[in-house]
Image: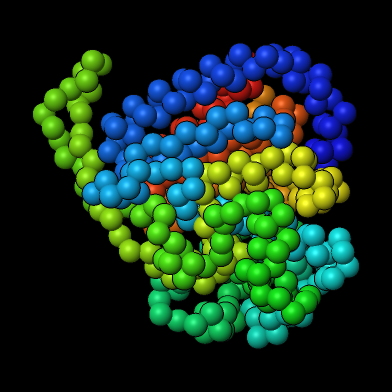
Length: 389
């Protein structure tokens, strides 16, 4: 939807934005200063961000270390967990296969997961792949996510859904899912004789030269250049105050182990990648790798499918957003009535944010190896400043 509307006016939009990129250069300079300051303030171990314009990476910065012991510095190839920023990859490959007629987005999920049942007879058969992609399945939000932390097989987890009664008919309400999103994997794998991870590698990572990208816990653990996850253990009063008279706190982070929980649902949260990979992914989604991501594919992914009213009250973003929907694997936000295609991710010890403006031809991603809400401020501020330029 947005690509059909905006590609003809990209040139004019970029001219109005300032073709010599002065504003974007200043934004990058300010972001570098502010992020370095706040990383120090909150004692965040490490982070990285990338800004792309059209088909070029114009800024790529790394901060801090892979762990709080400062074992290694974060660099452009350091791999982070993307958490739910994995969902755009799953949606892309599913929609790609549908456009190739290898599966249909109108297929019921029970065609591929016959043991998936709900408490209401016949309700599961009404949930189609397109409802999974857009979080409009009718299931209660985050259904059984808690069971991912248990030492249960996915077969056992899925068997519990026969106790769940839908809260609405499919396509009638929004309910964010992880386990249900994971059900895309058997659908994708049924369409050909390749694993989900191999398919992402073959159709996305390799042709886009996302050389550090992968799927799964084993490859993450075997990679020597990975960011380690950190959770906040406590905050300590320092007895000092800043220039505004506000008490200064010390943030104590704990390095934790990478666990298999959300890796069990690879389409929802199984992708690993570096900040250099994210730059390439943004350029492709901005339409500059049409042989990999066609305009028709990008258009279908970014068409609003279901309104996400709750996002309008989201911390930091609520001061900027004028509208919010979910498409296929992407959130479609509007700032000053201009679309930003966006997603965020959060698993134990990691945060990730990615977004791009089809109209301005600009993309931005940030990765952190700590569960810091600072990432919400960084991303929302970036897009607000960009649209205020």
